[in-house]
Amino acid sequence: MSNRATLIGGTAVLMWATLALFTTLTGKIPPFLLVAMAFAVATAMIAVKWAVRGENPMVFLRQPWPVWLLGVGGLFGYHFFYFLALRNAPPVEAGLIAYLWPLLIVIFSSLLPGERLRWWHLAGSLAGLAGAALLVTGGGQVAFRAEYALGYLAALACAFTWSGYSVLSRFVKSVPTDAVGGFCAASALLGLICHLIFETTVLPASPPEWLAVLALGLGPVGAAFFTWDYGVKHGDIKALGAFSYAAPLLSTILLVLTGQGEASGLLALACVLIVGGAVLAAKDMFARKA
Image (tube, rainbow, N blue to C red):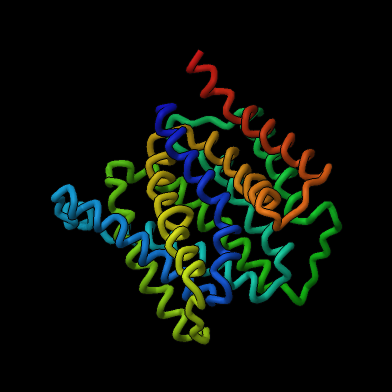
């Protein structure tokens, strides 16, 4: 594994930190339509890259069906289960369950050839989970109720989908990262189909909302999936899993800086837990560098 690949994969977490901000700026666009639009932008982005460099897209897209199932299932499946969870359970509880995926990545990655789960990987990930829980719940109590069982199961499926996709990607590391462009195109199509079935169309109402959709497709719902793919295939997957808890922290800080949130002692404590946990879980990477 390479430190460079880990750092590249870490940029995905930085981009995901902008997801909440950009999403709030898109107005009242329904979730599945927003997914379709953002993935369409991501597809256009990689298509421009292929055109500029004179590359044949089929070199990247001609992959076995299990690779397509893994890629599309990971990208679209995560969003499908997440929105299903939000429709059938309170957002705090659904978000908390869904954000088990970084911890699951750390645990599942220990099953990969050449990987071992050490105490600092697990301790760092649990510290990150505790910090993320503080941010998601605002320090309040969480009440799980039986009537929201479907939503809770969907949130759990969401967590297993993304962690499974990330860890299983190590078995197809020979598949070029540009293949993610095809997964984005398929996810855009599936998002549109789900929108037509489940939602009423509401388009962006102003130029800033269109720009927010563009920003989503270029960053957190676009380039982030390409850098994450490279990172989990060639970098320290345990460090990436633990560092992923920085996304809700950085997202909260970004909302505070833009006036859409408030700084608090709770935020500071979450910062200590998440940053400290990420550093602890990445102990192997720092040791190799030394």
